[in-house]
Amino acid sequence: MESIFATTFTQTTFLSPLWPPSNEVSIIANFSHFSFSGRKFAAPFSLKVQKQLAIGHSNGQAINSAKCSATLSDTLSQTSTLADIDWDNLGFGFLPTDYMYVMKCARGESFSKGELKRYGNIEMSPAAGILNYGQGLFEGLKAYRTQDGNIVLFRPEENALRMRAGAERMCMAAPTVEQFLEAVKETVLANERWIPPTGKGSLYIRPLLMGSGSVLGIAPAPEYTFLIYASPVGNYFKEGLAPINLVIETDFHRASPGGTGGVKTIGNYAAVLKAHTAAKAQGYSDVLYLDCVHKKYLEEVSSCNVFVVKDNVISTPAIKGTILPGITRKSIIDIARSLGFEVVEQLVSVDQLLSADEVFCTGTAVVVSPVGSITHKGERTSFGDGKVGRVAQQLHTALTRLQMGIAEDNMDWIVKLK
Ligand code: COI
Image (cartoon, rainbow, N blue to C red; front, side, top):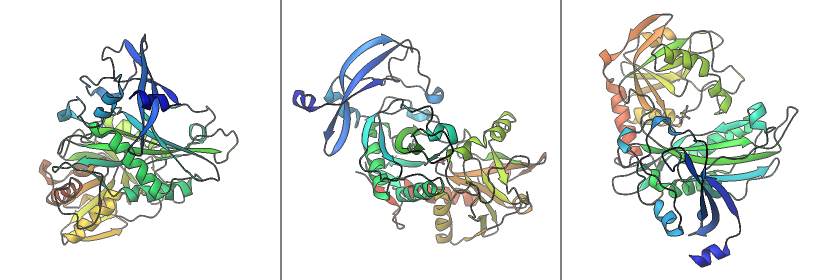
């Protein structure tokens, strides 16, 4: 252990958000970076205790006794022993994990080498492109712990490709597919102890791409940062798999033709907050957006895509630049077709929606979420008597069995990490 420390040369200050639970005293630890099995880690180098202000996190989810460790061997064992949290009550709140991945590159150049760092705050110029002009993208994917002890990812190369497409739209440098996949794998394995036990949730992986260089006039930032952090999650909606209640938004729009609705830029999500907050205050689960030209065709829900079922036909709004091309959306279309449903990607009107047999949403965070009611201009239409629809249930089961490694991966969608 001594010799490893002796060969290290970089040190980072880490303010532990995990300890102590009293929120009155925090640990400042210096970490030295080292390599192990080809992966880079940061190990506690020295510790000192000092008074600090509390660091808020975790959306009310309790961390029982996650500890900041003082030895290299403890740090390594942290990666395999399950974190001590309440795995039965995971929601979709942020829980910080041990490591994040960071890689930078200058405008006009290519990303080359990134590294794992202890999770913590990042420093950025107040003039950074992302802070001033919203030059940023994010992704979302999940890692699962399977029954037979594997750790698996679901279609991560699709996220890499989508980030590259978004980067092109936003004039940003982007990691290659290989760099993206390697970074995701390293982040997941370094945070292994935060992957929920099988059936209790997943590790949500959040890759960010940011214009991190300073810029004052409108221009692409001179530097880009690719960063991945992760958080264990359970259900996105508090309803779980129970049907959600949506309201159709008629005043605000999420996207417009020629805009950025079809890429995962951060601004798309800031733009929905006003309608989303108002809808939540009125007891709705989320907002369904309409096209901004005719104001009668469905686009998507704030955080997910929407599907409408009538007899054996499943319809979903076609991808035409204003709708996010969801990876779960794409997967559900393939699964539904393989199960014998006819799936059509087309314009779906509000009238078609309100006369449907069943409605459901799909997304990485929401998985497959049945819709129990839709309120449009004050009138509420209910679906399925408060029960989960037959088609949504069938598709949810088929998808989650695949994602959790229970069903055979005939589609070649699963990437095994262990
Ligand atoms: C996801 O489903 O992964 C998303 O990115 C949606 C986000 C609003 C949670």
